[in-house]
Image (cartoon, rainbow, N blue to C red; front, side, top):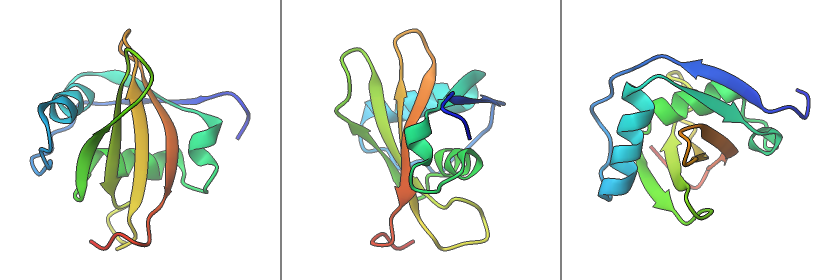
Length: 117
């Protein structure tokens, strides 16, 4: 992977089992899942060995929840907790920020062995 951020185009998907902690992350998640948008994966998002595909899967299947985080001014920053793929019990966390202009930047992804599904 080069230092250039990686982009993945996301097709609309449906997902019904989102943990609703507050209105903010739920609305953000709705925008992410149901509207066509691009994801940008920064080099720091792959620092812990999580691939963009695994991070994307956890974002679209956050069975352990979605939490709003404090982020940069104007951004909505969200943590997703889920499996990197369907054939594992491993849990990862993925942090992403929705920029004011609509782009979604994934800047952190790592294993969370302390979380059990």
